[in-house]
Image (cartoon, rainbow, N blue to C red; front, side, top):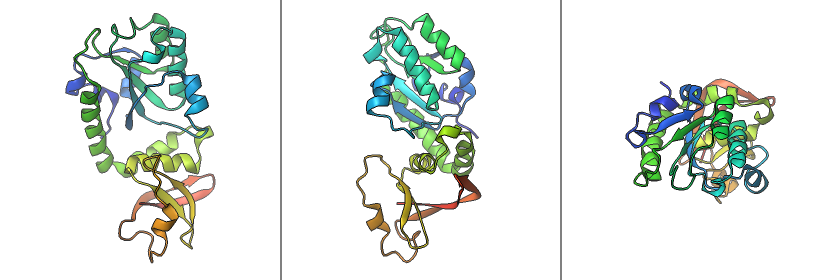
Length: 240
């Protein structure tokens, strides 16, 4: 079982939506859903994105409002998001905010195999949260039933430049909806990833004093095959 983009297109909130570019991407697997509010990729790189950020299998919802009259920036956006592992975007309110999806924008999406899903033009009755609820539910059910093979497979697909322990842990934290840590034999944290990213939980304090790190509110995810990242072999991940 895989949650491919073509499966999400069958959900009620996306009935009437059309894949207008990057149609080959409908075969790709979706791992997460996010909003894309600030659409200037250069500003995102300067002010928001971290050097090791990667969003493998992400699908974004946007109206392209902040760059609605600039097809060049729209092209830059999808090329930048494609490089970060994003599969495609669902564009709402075409004809309301963005007058129309420019031909150059659609051509760029086809060239890089980046899905552009257009909600019916001029339709102001469709709301973001309808798609968010349905898509998130499907992704949640899939992650719970297919967690181990999903993570093992996706870690192997991360580009070389982003094959770091930090990237691996962020993917695991997002999939588990949990803070994730790697500790040494003295229960000292070697690496960690927070969920949500803004979490202020004192991870060291949370595991301090536990006889077994994977007891009580701390749980382990045992992986069928060892993950090897930069020479470090991992066969168990613990989350808080």
